[in-house]
Image 1 (cartoon, rainbow, N blue to C red):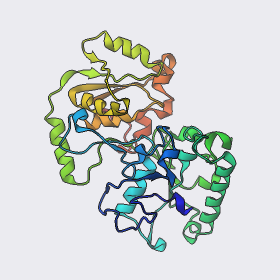
Image 2 (cartoon, helix red, strand yellow):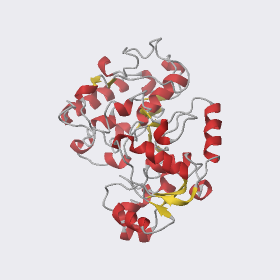
Image 3 (cartoon, rainbow, N blue to C red):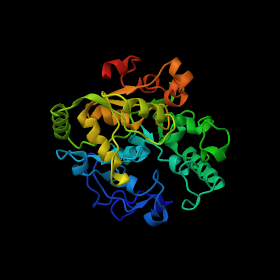
Image 4 (cartoon, rainbow, N blue to C red):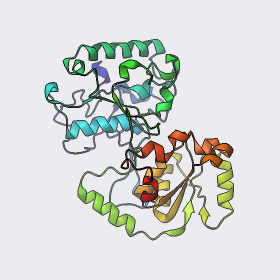
Length: 346
């Protein structure tokens, strides 16, 4: 429905002249999928703060990060679909369908997933979601551009792990399933998934959104000029498997376990300062085998230490994650189809 269009400058029209042009234009978003912010509550994965500036998220505080040469952003890990939509709109949007050679299908898959949707604030039931997906299928099948190869030139962005859509039960996936043959011919863009010809795992959204080559050079000059401690930093979380690592790291001079004070919403600002001040960062598994912080650590010039291997999977499966969801297998296509890409990056 029209009310679900991305509300970019107080207008529902993406072609509104008030929307700034140019790559990755920063535009405020007063609502989320047409739902007023005050109705969304404080659910972190889908709140309005995470979707500010069309997916960039909250602008980080320079006093907290210690960075004033470029603007950094607290980009939500599940904002990948909005970043794609904004990139297409600003860089390669073809208004005449018959001239296009790639079609992006902007489905709210993450927002309709049970792990994201809050029954108190999100009105869609599983049955409503199923009806919505049925409507989308019917609409696409009626289009000439879809009929020419059955959707082989269409792209879907999954802002959650692909594993979250394996179930046969629609109630567990919000109505979208990987095994649905209708979506089978479409290319999927996601992160942390198995090696599959129909899937490209891209890097997770990061803190850095340059708008020019000058921004990139400015940031690189800043990163390489930083004075760093010859030690590692471990930013702990409440996950149970972090307890052992936190304890061991605290006992060693070569490893730091900082405890940020103050507003928890600014915690990631503090993390950026840590990555810019240390040579290494400890990156155990997060919700999955890989982490957003891995990419932010790389961007900050801090060498990430990752965990994998058969022995680790036997003793600490939560840290290691599934064998085919490791950094090497998940991102090898993104980093050049070389299974040794991680060594080269390091």
